[in-house]
Image (cartoon, rainbow, N blue to C red):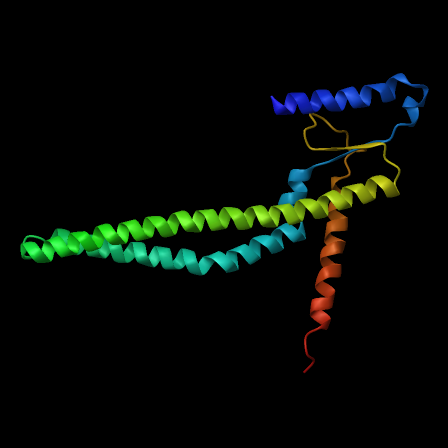
Length: 183
């Protein structure tokens, strides 16, 4: 429903361009935001940073789950030979561990979602700035940002925006490389 309203609003904005005498001069373009947000160097860099940040926690949770499974297997195997107090203690330990692991998994998912959203917001801001600069520099009257059913190749500015993102990524990584001590 939101897409229909969005497309309708865009059409309402674009239609007057075609009804005026300046319609032949209207310059329109289209950019695939999803492609930029998935394939740009900044997106790949963000993905790598998040992987490095969250891999240790994920590995610890997997190890905890493995330990829990071993404890459950031990209870199933040796439960009949344990005293009632030992079995009860082991069962309580399993319940506590399950609860702790469940809390840790929930916390992990929340933290991962929050970081993903932070990285996405940063990238969206960069993409927005790139699109605006292309529009201003090349005198576009309107640039559509996804939500388009069809865009001819001559109006598709996605590759141009991707190239600027690549250049921006090189510009931001160059100072870091020059800051390294020389051997």
